[in-house]
Amino acid sequence: MQPYLATLKEARYITGDVKVLSVEINDPVAREAFKYAPGQFAFVSAFGVGESAVTFVSVPHRPGPLEFAIRRVGTVSAALHELDVGATLGVRGPYGNRFPLEDYRGKDILIIGGGIGMAPLRPVINYLLDHHDQYGNLTIINGARSPQDLAFAEEFETWAKAPRTRLELTVDRGDDVWKGRVALVPAVVEELKPSPANCVTITCGPPIMIRFVLQSLKKLGFADSQIVTTLEAKMKCGIGKCARCNVGEKYVCQDGPVFTFDQIATFLEGF
Ligand code: FES
Image 1 (cartoon, protein in one colour):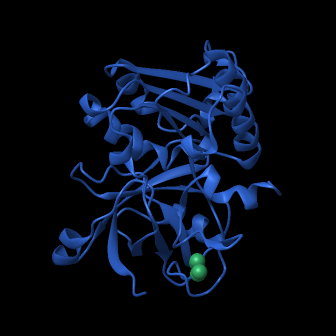
Image 2 (cartoon, helix red, strand yellow):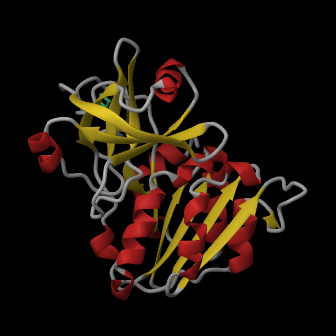
């Protein structure tokens, strides 16, 4: 439960209200021993203010600092946004399960992200691109409210040019500069008509988007077991002790945050 002391190496905005913090654990032995996987999360703390559960956006197999995308929504995230490069912060983790990417080898992968929901999907995308010979076709649908809210724009060119990869960007509202698609994410799913045959879908975004994406995928013949998501929940301990993060009978911190939709069907009845 003790956080590692860490240093903020870099901070950059990737949308108007989302900052990526690049963080290095101070102790070289702990830094070397710290292993995580796409889908897992950590608690990042601003000392004297509090801590937040945040998914990793860094790519575990690529060397470099830990990265966390933090949206400014409350006191802890505001304090983390205000930190200067060189500041000390805390990192506790990693926690939770991961995307079982090795189980998806040989399959087509459909990634559907909305807004900051792209955060846990970014390491998945980059893992798949770095191991593209082990997977089928990769389709990425990335949607946001506005062009400025599209997360990880600096990587779009790389993603779009990768072998057997299709990147579809869409926004709810365009502007004078935007030449791309203006449509809701579920409409794009229905327009592209991905085949459910030998395909896994990984989706993350606002609940309303997930709800309608789910309906669209089901219309296309996807089964709940082919659709994977990662849930957000209020968390305190991260280790299954405080009962703050339950979804039905499951604890998001321990059983998740990664679930297939057939695993959380009960929860979805009220979704
Ligand atoms: S955060 Fe405490 S049980 Fe999940």
